[in-house]
Image (cartoon, rainbow, N blue to C red; front, side):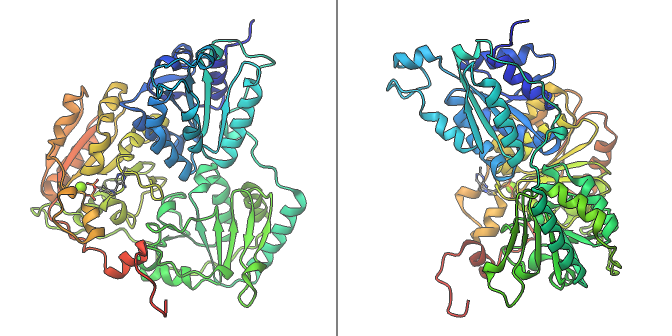
Length: 568
Ligand SMILES: Cc1ncc(C[n+]2csc(CCOP(=O)(O)OP(=O)(O)O)c2C)c(N)n1
Ligand SMILES: [Mg+2]
C-alpha cells in the first residue's frame, strides 16, 4: 500500500486521538484537507457559518472531548478564526487548526494571488495564526510524520492549540517514512515526572498537610482539561478535605459531592464559604486556579500565598511560609499533576472533615405573574437543570449572576470566564452537543451575545442537535451598563430582533420555539421544553434589571484607571 498523502495522513493521525468531527469552512488552497476530511470514514464535516464560529464550536467540543479539529482556508479563513482560537489558547484547549496554503510553485513565482496583499508575498499570515497556538508546523512530505508527533504531544502537554499548515501541492504528495498509528487522547502519554522531584514534592506536601488543622482544597478548571476528575474524586474520598471552586472552575467536580463547600468568589462568596476558605491554614490548590477578575468578585479574594500548596499540571509550588522571604517559595519540576494525585490518594491520612453547611439552592424570587427578571430567572434555571446536563453560558449579566446556582449531580458548567468573547456560547453549545450526544445541552445567552453568532442556530438544525436554548432579551448590552454606570448610550442598544422566529427561518425542523414574558410563562415553557423530543428555543423578555451597577470602588478595583491613594 502506498503511503497516504500529507492531507490524508494529518487528518487520519488526528482521528486516531478519537476526534470524530471537523469544524470549519472549505476554501481552494485548503481543498486537499477538505477532501481528506470528506473521504474519511472516521471524521464528519460540520460546516460552520463562518470561521470564528467554527473556532468557538471547536472550543466547546474540546471542553468535552479533550481536543478538536478546526479547518479554514489560507489568510481570509484563518484570520477570521483568530479571536476564537486565541480564546482556546487562553482557556487551555487543544484545537488542531488545519490550514491549506498556496502551492510551493506559486510561492516561488511571487505572483499576485488572491487572498494576498498583491505584493507577491504569501507567508505573512502564518505568523499571526501561529501566535494563537502553542506550537505550529509547516508541513512537507518529508517532515509530516515527525512534525505531527511533535505538535500533538506539545498541544496535549500544554492543552493549547496547534497550527498546522501545508502548501497545496505538498498536501497532495505521499508522506515519506513509516506512518504512526496513534492512540486515543486519554492514552497519550504527556509528562513524565522526574522521580526524585516527585518524591521531594510529595514529602513537602505531606509535611505541610500533616501540620494543617483546617485545610481546604480549591479545584482548577485544568483538572477537566487534563481529564483527571476520577483521580481528584479518589483523593477527595481518601482525604476527606472539603473543596470549593472559583468562577472559572465551576462544576469541575460535581456540585452534589458531599465535600463541596460552594463557590469561592472573594467578597462575593457566601459568608460560610468565605470563613472556611479564608480561615483555612492550608489551601491545596489542585490544578492551579487562575484568580481572574470575574472569578473572584473583582480581585476581592483574601488568601495568603504562604498557605498555598499548588499542584500545577506540570509542577508543584509551595508558598513561602509567613516570615520567610517570597523567594523561599519551593518549586518541584517536572512533576505531573496525575502522579501527585495518585501518590496523595495513597499517602494522605484521612482528615476528620469539619461539619459545614451544605451549599443551598438559590431561593425562588418573583411572583408568577411578574415579568421575568435577571434575579427571578436564576432559581428557575436551577430547578430546570437535570443531572449530567452541560450548561453553556455566554458572557453577560447571566455569567455573573448564575455562578451561585447549585448544579445537579454530574452537571458541568462551561463559560469563557477568562477570555470573555461574547457570542462564544451559541457555537460552543453546538460543539458540546456534538461532543457528547448523551448529555443534554442547555445554552444560556444574552441577546447581544447571540446577535454575533446566531447563524449557528441554522447549523444546529442542519446537523440535528437538540439543545435547550434560553435567550435573555433585554434589548441591551446590559452588563456594559452595569460596568459603565451609564444607562442611555446608543452603543449599548440592540436591534430589536424577533429571536423566537430565528430557528424557523434558518431551516430548523421540530423545534419548540416560544417567547415568554412572565415567570409563570417561563415555567410552562421550560416544562414543555423538557418534554419536547427536539430542540427548544425560548426567548425571554426580561424586565428591568435588578442588579445594581457596580460600586465605584469595584470598578476601580477592576480597571485601575486612577493613581492609588497613599494607603493602598
Ligand atoms: C467579542 C466581544 N465584543 C465585545 C465585548 C464587550 N462586551 C462584554 S459583555 C457585552 C454585552 C453582552 O450583552 P448581552 O449578551 O445582551 O448580555 P447582557 O449584558 O444584556 O446580559 C459586551 C458588548 C466582548 N466581551 N466580546
Ligand atoms: Mg442583553
